[in-house]
Image 1 (cartoon, rainbow, N blue to C red):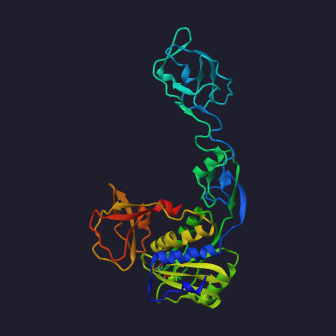
Image 2: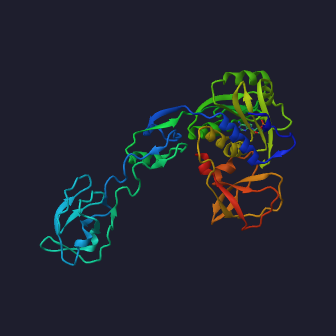
Image 3: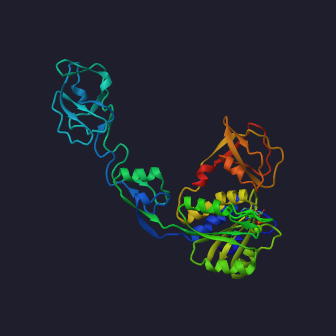
Length: 407
Ligand code: AMP
Ligand code: MG
């Protein structure tokens, strides 16, 4: 991280600026080490090298229908005899001139055939010949060799995140293993004297630690090796000691302890033995964000309120991490939808409201407090209401898909 990342303490930092800075920081510390994995193990990982087709797909012309393969120029109203039957998985001989071949879906077209007529459109004569009553278009119902992919084509770019479709595509090309970026090691730290873990009885003044589970599960979905570093009490010496134990990770992600006016132990530790940026983001929820490094290990400190944790992780920490892995597509699916609500008070910060689509309109969860994680469980997306704007019902708002952000 460099000095230009400092913001004036009282200035709100636009989201775009914060993201730009984080991405620039990510680019300066890329994770490049690769490993070769079987397709079965590569789900959720990032492709390290482009996937180049080593064969045509399909590898040979084949039938898209159950029917009859023929040479279109030979169909002139006269019935044709059936000279062979071709099932999927067979290798046919050439089509005898003046005949057709019984063929089934996925079976190779015999040499000399160029079109297929579906079985529903033919008449079977008593002598075993077949009459084609409808005009036949050259090439109909044929999946041409290489129609999906040509040998040598780049099918997936390096930096693609692998999911079921990408892995299925690799399999279709006969590829059994892929080179992927190693998992980033991310330590998750929850700060706060008030936190205890679920399963234990709740004492006076305590709350259950929700952010730990939220972030650990989310990071696992993003292909990270998660080091769950547990709960850190609000104490400088313990903070220092804990951060010091995490020297092997690629990122320390903490929550809590970044609110204004609070004893800021994470910040103090970074200031003393690393580098510190304290940002006040122009977004709501999620104003305070700490980032920097501790003895060279990157640290991002998210705000502690669970909905703030969710929004800042989604909009900032997630793209930062993916960028370090070389992921090319960082922008989540988003689209304009009419607001199913009015917004009368223009805000200083951009709102990320937890919302659902109902009858094509974005409707809001009733409680948008940053402490309410239930809002995000109900929501399908985040609706963006820009700073300084008011909205009437029906005005278009940007809707960001939450399911995509979470994967
Ligand atoms: P802080 O930034 O530490 O002042 O935390 C802001 C709010 O988030 C406080 O109400 C905390 O109790 C709450 N909070 C902090 N960490 C967590 C956590 N891990 N799980 C649930 N709530 C938290
Ligand atoms: Mg706290």
